[in-house]
Amino acid sequence: MKLNTNKIKSFKIYTDDTDENKVLVGNDIETALEILENNGYIVEVEIEEINPILYVEYLKKVVADIKANDEWVNDSHTKAEHRGVCNGLDMLVRHFEEEGDTK
Image (cartoon, rainbow, N blue to C red):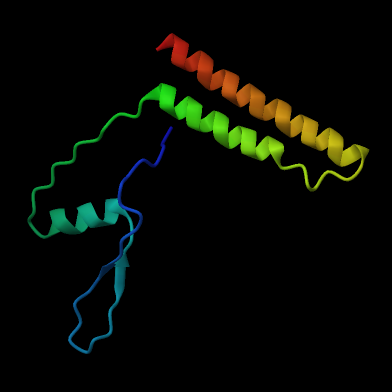
């Protein structure tokens, strides 16, 4: 599972072209690290583990937002679909809660 908790919102890597035409060569951390390593830099990366309790709380907020969006429900069929979506999301939250209890 990958949760993006980086502090950098976005970045882009360009070539340094003399005609002032920048050429995009990368916009993700893996590409940036590869470019540095290929140019002789030694890269050490420290990854901070995510607190699983905070992740589950964040997940619960997202699920609540999704479940609250019922603007598209306009008949018995879409109501049943919304109920199914809600049930699936509840199962997802329970799964993450249970996984957190076993670790």
